[in-house]
Length: 562
Image (cartoon, rainbow, N blue to C red; front, side, top):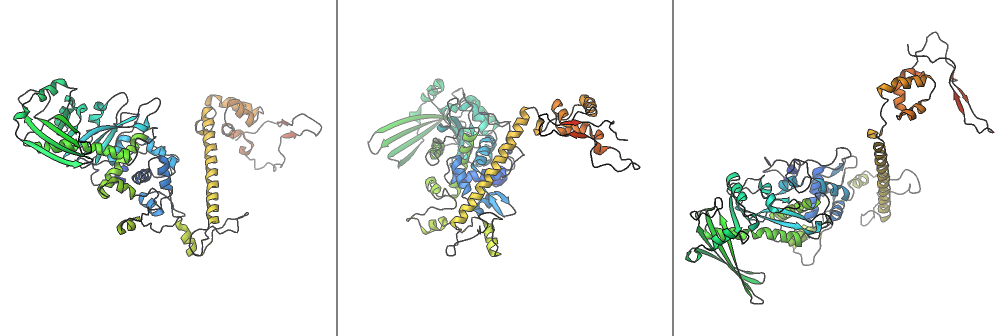
């Protein structure tokens, strides 16, 4: 069962063993496809890659992802592994409905683990939660997502917190799949739990740095009563920015002999922050206490201050998801959509920070919403203009093949039979507007016919299933009624009447009486040739008669197979 415990997901989360060094597409292959095998047209991994690329380009909804996919050039779809029509050598992008169904149904725990950054070698991992406010409904609260982020700002994974609980219940499930040996796990005061500390040190072989606040009065009072004024080793950090000037000081004390009633605690830390608003001159002061299992040799006051500051890195990731990707404004709320869309945003943040400009808003601006059109700015540098210059791609590659071979594509007959569907403007080389209109009209008519046929097929299957007929076909004749059917047929009852009486198809009746049918009778080599007229006598009604026509069986007995 999926470790995603917030909503029903019976898919087993894929193992992360052997994923190091694999590309994103190779890792996504391990995810199970939530679709039924019948009717699958688009590759599962290709749909996820297209959705991830659209989100990285700034798409904030399923509609925007579908528009991005529809306007993607052929070379982009080919790199993403989109569906290929071999006869025309054309890549077909999935529709918005297909993308929505897959994103809302794919295993959320496996998708978050496979697209995240492995914490191996990271100095610290910060854990904190965030609510996707737009996913709130009338009957369910907003989806609350617990995330883990490295000190470099890379998202490791995330997990949706079950409703009517808090982040404490999802802490171990979030970090369980990863190797945290030697990594420092930082968290706010909510996760300062004895069970979490034991699990991190004894099971995961990791270290912890947890904040202690007044909600744990005994532990907080014991830390506050320590002789902090006698500590001479301090670390000062000063920063200026965002309209304020901040000074932070960190002090540490070894508390192994104080019996603080907290597992594996070795050091206590006191962080004092002074903030001065440069505009108003207002000064604020904040004191924070923390505990860790690291010794003074492993974590100096300078390291403690740096690790405490790294906890704010996850808040910066949440800020980017709210401002750059407008997560709180997203109204996606069906199925696993909220957490999977948040996972795609996390993937975009990781990739943009790895390969893009130093700031994410600039990186997002360099990714055009429509892949076939790049943004044009008068103040862009020559390098940016070269990156934004759209490459020459054809809307339909098979048109070039037709032009090269001097062939014309025409409608077989009708009012538009004289129109060349590959005609281009002699000067610009673009498709004529009339041709575009005709191609779009024909494509729309084909899609309409396909949708109508699919709707009729689905409606027929549902109606057959409502009648108890599996697969749209009526069942065969039961074994205990076969003799009665054969007797009734010999007595002259028609196949259609027998099918109605027994609730089966006429084919089932024919199967039951196959050896009694005239075409299955044994032929006598000495018998004369059969007459073309059937032995049956059909009495047609006259024009003036209102009685229906009647059928009279032959007077002689039916022959049976020898």
